[in-house]
Image (cartoon, rainbow, N blue to C red):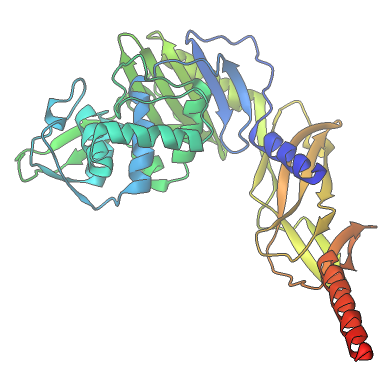
Length: 400
């Protein structure tokens, strides 16, 4: 029980980042967050778990599911409903044929609600069923304050998320190169189709990418704008500088949100530094079983973010191994590596084996820096049973 509990605690620490004390910076948004994408550490937050309407930043989830569920070259035939979608659209026509990739660009660049509905129907048959898929995926990603009612972000009392949840969704979407490619584009052209003889020219609404000098931010490379009268201005932004990517989310903001976003980016880049501490392809420890050495690797790359006036040299790494194991399979978690600074735990990362070790006869018990082989209780019990059976059989023979 203690072994199981310890790894639950490890998982909690690994997936729940340290939140730095907020500076004197304030933003007009009701909910906001600034996160270092590599380390996952929160550099600024304001009501990060408050449920708020996301408006068209909803389309990040729609894009994520599209990338995960459909092929970019798939042909989509537009149904009856998308041409009548409310709000921003590219005026799709019933029976028109476009590729998933074209609709995905319309979704993220032009923020087209008709493209959102068309993709939802293509993937799930209806927007209602697609909303169920959105909610299921949100739960899988760890979102605790999110519920979607449509694929586009049109206002609904039962359609909400939080700054932190929207970051989690964006973080997952960033794992896909096609998502990062599309959100960084300034424009996109959809060529003529079977129903539309004219090309459609789409321009990114993100003023950090496509704005005047007032808002243009040279490090920006995404993500998505949003606005409805009730939701007010919503925005998810990304910027990359010196190998670091920061994600900003602001919800229910006023029209000055770009100033706030740039201010947060500058704070994140100027006040903090992120370094790769553990490489998932480099073994950090070797366990010894008899004459066999088995290397252990971090489950994933581990980055640490510190304020620039702090030193990385003070980081301490401590190895924790499971006390009892049996056979080892590739990918098995055999312990954790804990990263401390000034005796404060920053992260706990699972350690995995990259090889197999067949061990049917023995249990492995960790002591004195290595695993000792001990006869498995299972085999002891079986041996005892065979011995008893043999004695009983012997007695029957003697009686005869």
